[in-house]
Each structure stands twice: as C-alpha cells, then as structure tokens.
Amino acid sequence: MKKNNAFALAAASLMSATNISSVSAADWSHELNTFIYNESDGRVSDKSIKYSGKASLNDGDTLLNLNLGVDILTGASPTGALPSDGKTQIITSPSGGTQTTNTSSTLEKAPFNDKRFSFDVGLNKAINETGTRANIGFSFSKENDYKHLGLSTGLSKEINNKNTTLAIGLAYSADTIDPIGGTPRPLSPIGTRKTLSSKSKKSIDMILGVTQILSKNTITQFNYGYGKQTGYLSDAYKRISVIDNNGNIVNNIHEARPETRAGHNFFAAIKHSLNNGNVITETTRLHADEWGTNSFTSELKYRMALADKSSIEPYVRFYYQSAADFYTPQLSNEKALPSYASSDYRLSKFSSYTLGATYRLKTSSKNEWNLTGEYYQQVPGGLNFGEDDDDDNSSSGKTVNNPGYSAFILSLGLKF
Image (cartoon, rainbow, N blue to C red; front, side, top):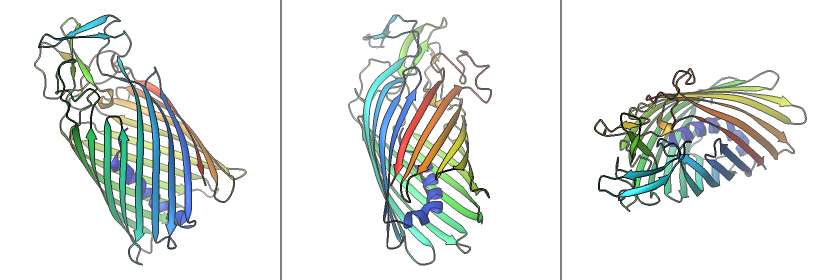
C-alpha cells in the first residue's frame, strides 16, 4: 500500500481540470471518509479514516489541498512459501543452525498489526492571467517499518480559448525501509543472521498530460508517465520454498529483486454528460516496465441522478498483468540459485475485477453524504481466469501458494 506517484499525478491532473471552478466557489470545503477493507481467508484487513480539506484564496488564484489519514492494518499476508502438510517443519541453514516453524496445509501467512499515518499538502497558484498555473506538494507517511517523504511540482497552461489544458508534473520520493527483525541477505535461508541496518528506496515520476474539452458535455484527457525506482525493492518478509525432485521442501529462503525498476504509463479518460444529466466516465491505463509486469486497467462508471438531490454511480473495473520475469512459485534444489527470484503473488500473472457502486445524497448546498461498496476478486492466470493453470506450479496461474482471493470494501464519507 505504498504511494504510487505516477497514478496520483494522473488522477490529480484530471480532477484539477474538472473541479477548479467548484473549489473556487467556497473559501473552505472539507471531506471526511471512513474506510473498511477485508480480504478473504483471514488475510489483510484495513480500517482507516481520511480527512481532505480544500481552500480557495484570492478568488481562486490560489488553491490549497490538505489530506490526513490514519490506517490500522491487521491480519496476515502470504509469505510465498509452500505449505508443509500441517507438520512441524525444521529448516536447516547452511551453517547448521535450525529454526522450527509451525505451518499448516493452508496458505502460509505471516500475521501483522500495523498503523500508518499519512499527510500531504499541495498548493496550486495562478502565475499569470493567461491560464498558467504552478503547483507544489509535499507528502509524508509512516508505519512500523516504513517511512515515506515525497515532493512534487508541476505546471499547467490553458490554450485554445481555455478548451485545452497542457500539464507537466514531476514527483520525487525518498523512502526508508526498516524491517522488523532486520534486513535479510538476498536468497539467504530463513533463520540466518540479518543485518540491522535500514534500507532506502528512491523514486522519480514524470507525467505529461493534455485535457481537451470536446463539447459542452464531453471532456477527455491523455497522460504519459515515466517512473523509476532504485534501491531496496525486495520485500523482507517474503520467502520462497526450495524443493527436491519429490516435491519435498528442503529449505525456505528470502526473496531477491533487482535494485532498479523503470516503467512507462499511458492513461486516457473521457467523461460525457448525457441530456438527462447522467454522466458516463471511462478510463484506461496501460503500463509496461523492465521487470516484465505489463498491465492493462479499464474502468467504466455511470452516474445516474435520482430524486431528492441524490445519485447512484455503479462501476466495473478490470485489471490484467503479466508475471515478473523472475517470478516463480518455487525453486529446485537441483539447480543453482538465480540472481533474482520471488514467489510474491503480487508479481504473478493474474486478472482481477471490481464491482462497485457509490450512492450520494446532498442535504444542503455544501453538504453531501456518500456511501461506496465494492467487491474485488483476484484470479491467478491469464484472461481465461486460470482455468487451465490449477496447481501446475508454472510461472503463471493458480498454485498452492497463490490461490487467489476476494475482498470487500466499504466506505462512508461526508463533504461539508
């Protein structure tokens, strides 16, 4: 759940293009949201509260955005190791040391309990009377073993009688990772000595965008983004099982990922208001990076006006990604260890879909309640939803340590 600068920049540029006039109408506007996220099989649970404040100064010449958040994360995350049929497993390290772990025939998971505090502030200011605006932002978040610091800046320019907006944005973050129990050596056996030093990760993201008003009812946007991460990109809590020719686990080792990751993003969105006041929005995102995790996202929303100043907006989202080049459900003790390997399901080949709806109710000129419910389903494998991949231990598809999962999301918010 770390901050994705490129996606945030893309979303912010679309919102700034469509919402500046409404923000300028009031000196301050506020929004409070509570959020509940629960995964199946006793996996991750997230309960959070978010505050967002927007201020308009000097008749809209200066816009201030403030966001605060607190997340309580509990549950268990899959380690990536294979189950060991419910027996007590003794893992022997090359140095002769041993570690006893109690596992079960179900998915091996590592329990956690964490709190995350997040804060970001942004300032958007007109720098001349020809539709040119500049923005700058700062972000911070902290949890037990992770700290994020980020800076962003950008420019936007209105041309073509304010029908076209050109934008450029740049974001930089410096993160510190301090795993509980220390940082493991790449591909070292579980239970061996870890270093106590923290690790760092740096990210830089750039975005170029154009927003075009096609008619009084239609607006569209296109963005290109480039991002690069360097530093410690592995997950200190993920492990991989090493098996023999009979399928028996002979060792569990820590994963290892490359220390650089560069990728390209293309984002497109179109929003159209129908004659009856209903609004349809479609967004598409394409991503490709040097790890091989190429992805495609498509989302369709339809906002319908109801009686008594209310509306409902159902939506559907589809996502597909290919597996990272170094993703593997397991390793063989008959082969030399590769330079990089991970069995993290987030780097596997999978498809997912989300079904959701948002209900909004205006109680006054400024106040609005919103209630959102979502169902998310992740299915290992390709576009066939993994039907031909069950337990084949291939580099893609469903495996015993990557069975897929579902999640329910519920949020309640108030704008005032």
